[in-house]
Figure 1: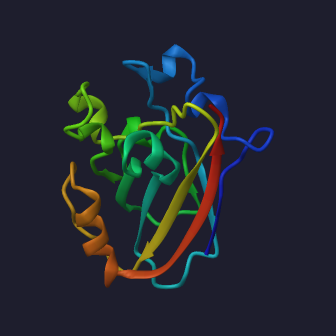
Figure 2 (figure 1 turned 90 degrees about the horizontal axis):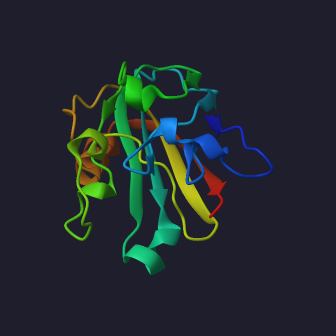
Length: 166
């Protein structure tokens, strides 16, 4: 399985990150998810799952920042732009904005894509999982739940580093 994201000058396009127009933000956080191209999905895959994690955030936040986790996405070669807000054909889990170490909380953005806002350029690790069956997780699940549920269901996974500018 292969995944790709269209970049501009080697970076995630601005509308999906720190430099997003106000119309694509909520409380100054980018909320419009980027499209993902997927090819060579293995035979037998019944659903997809994904994680978007910023490991470069460890020196800044003290932990890897979870920007987006989702599961039970219909098997497709294209996950469309803004699927997170549209919330159709996808079950989404908690991002790191739910952390007790974060002063700001808004339930409207906790279970969605929360785009990059790095202080300097960061790489974001996108992983897409091809699953032999749905996880049946409920909206608002946590990353540990997803890891447990995908462990025995994963047929194949693909990972991509996505740079975003600070």
